[in-house]
Length: 260
Image 1: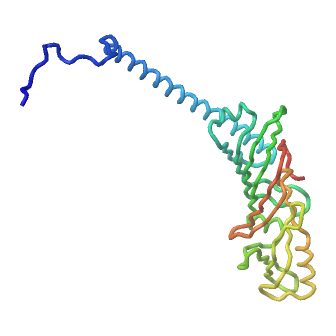
Image 2: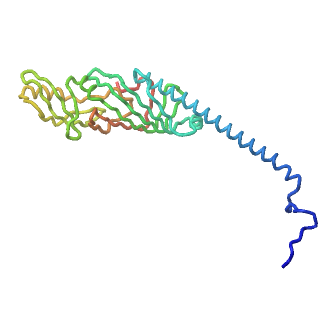
Image 3: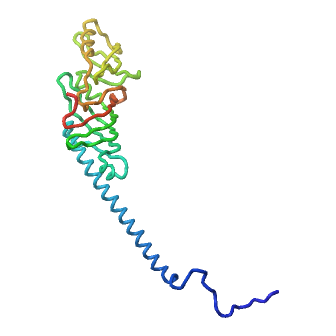
């Protein structure tokens, strides 16, 4: 067994290529690395803050322009998607913007119907040289029409029917009293909602009363309070109102661009 022997007093030798100068320099290099990382973190945090401020400014301007154009009592909510927004602004195109507006006032003279809530999703929103205009490559929107607003506009009480795609209309007619009918809701064309396939649900409706009711329901309701360029695709009856879905391609928004 070989006995344990001490070295010749020289102690452990540094590995090849490592000098005392480099060993003493390591703390300085470490401090520099830490400072560099800290500077990058501060720069990143500053960029996030600036991006957030810029996003809020653009959202506020968009909400103000939409409120002025649609005549809403309150400013809509605007949400710009994607990070960072600064690079989107630099390119002149926002990838996606969501807008939600409430109580868009009725327009038009024939049975004007307000929009209770309008949600709009805009893809590739681009501003032009004119600050009052913006162009979207594609738009998907849903207009919610509450039964309360519909009842006020049409002159008789509207509610959901038990059968999908239908609503009930309760009216009071001369000589026949209160009558409830069921009617289907459909999309004929030109952003209109039509009432078809009228059926008696409750009460008695003599021929003269039926003629009056058919005339009242014969004229489709035109949705005037919708931005131009959007086309009604479908309508669905819910427990509280109608959901009308719109789409549009290459839509230009400018002040007061609702369908008149």
